[in-house]
Length: 440
Image (tube, rainbow, N blue to C red; front, side, top):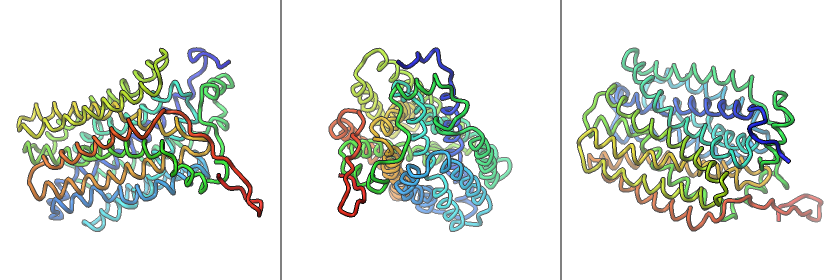
């Protein structure tokens, strides 16, 4: 029998915090462009459409490498891929600081997307290895809430650097933090089976609690990809999580611009106001999508019903962003946006944790790659669609309407397509006439 959680050491939580810090710094690299956008627009005379393209550049390469990155992750492991990914994204972040115009920034953001592509699937895979099922929501919420909290401390930090020192310093600071994280990751992270600081009691607790088994996929990683692409649960999760991603990335890239254009705020004032919804989003992510979900499941509530209820309720609250369209009062606008982001953020770690909850052995990285591929296509689409709508109508109303329609599609996918949240059976492996294994 597995030891009680209160009687085992907490090495797994050290790993969880490490992953959270990585995502926090990872997202500094994403938000610095939106904070620097007014200075970039003025210096390089950029149109709203060009800004939308710059906002989306990172997501094109990041998205396209999600599935290949997930396969590589399942093949070579979290430790090796995570180390090299952290080093490369710190170098790519530094390149942005010395770019000389639209083309240079666009190219640098594409390079950054390539470097950061394995980061989120690696966190999902590592969480599956390191945490039992009854702690999966909390452990996922640690790194997922870091994505929101990055806006709380990252936006003011980058805004201050940009106003006082110029936009290049905003990118230089994030490059330094990224390099420091690479050093910390190299020193701390190992998979459970290789971590000498993990006690035998804690390892048993993790494994007996339903942690994702370590090891490669039966039949090979390419065969696993085809097997998973034919699975209904994977598509239900993929469509639902991508719908959340569209609204999330709309706020991540355009919230400062919305506050400056619609509510006529300065860079520093908009940065201050923008932290308010992200504070509540961070708390909802950690407390509702993490601790509350695990608490309800621990009390015997049906796992699928609890997770789906939070998913649907959170995404429905995301529709309240329409209230911001009906007012020009900054307080009311921020109130409506805060409610919408809080709901979306409560749903986010639940959706992300499902990756490891439904994955068969050796398939977590691949499922994570599929889900994050389509989710980050939304990261590429949302800034462009929003930029063109705002440029055409001089209003954010149409952009928020598109986000609402996408959310409704996601809710339907979670409720109807996903089904019960339980592991997908491992594929049956057969031998062909040449003796080569194949997935049936």
